Image (cartoon, rainbow, N blue to C red; front, side, top):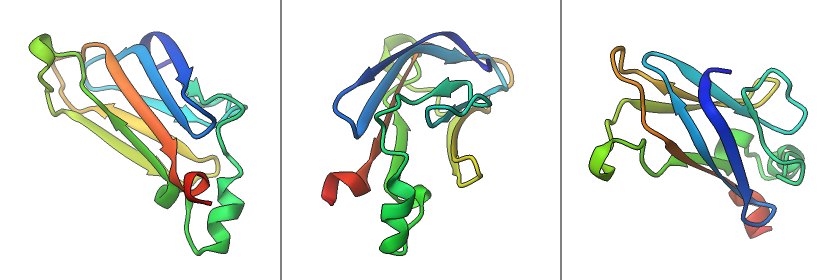
Length: 123
């Protein structure tokens, strides 16, 4: 697993997830995928709406359009952010969210990651 630590996944309803307990070493990347994606470092809970693919397609959207992924801070002392983390969503298959620490010399602190699916919130 490219993330270090033990992921703590908290579902705040079927459409939103908070992940804590992980960090990224210098110049590494970690991936998040849907439940059952054994190639992902962290799997979202089974109730997270992976069926949004079909619902989004009806409206001409992709998972990249309807699933948001961000982090609140990367655990740098004092609550500041190092601004060296990039988030990329790829359609795949499989759909994955990749968090990359671009800082070649410094690991992140503990990450607080949020992922939600907007399309099922507004349907």
